[in-house]
Amino acid sequence: MVRTHRIRAHNRLYYSGKHKHHGVNLQGLMDPYGQMIWISDGLPGSTHDLTAAQTHDILPTINRAETIYLYADKGYVGGESDLLLVSRKKPANSELPDDIKEHNRVLAATRAPGERGFVVLKNWRVFSRFRSRPRRVGACTQAVFVLEQEGTHKNRL
Image 1 (cartoon, rainbow, N blue to C red):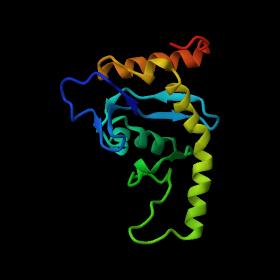
Image 2: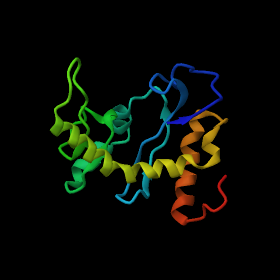
Image 3: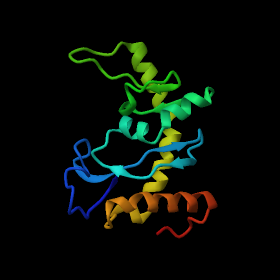
């Protein structure tokens, strides 16, 4: 999520209860080395990750690929795809068995380089204090995506 500071209309629409801040939900796909290969347009911060993935047709695209696995965070629990690998949540009032804890650790270690792609995106100063209209976040992320792909990121905005 990219935090935003200029919210006038639709105050609740852009408020993320999870992050306790106004912002825009972005979805991205990274290669196994942490390089960004796709970034979505922004959706309001109140949009759940799984809803955003469905809006951007991420899961159907992965299903059509048939050989690509999608390692995702717990926001994707409940996604309908055999190629979607998600950590398991702890059941209410009980502990996870050791084998599932190990499974979650392995998934987290596998996802770590992919998380680097979002870190690179958020290191651009324009996203540290985004003060424009929230619907413009998508255009800015697309521009940063192109600049990162071209390797012209020496002087960050």
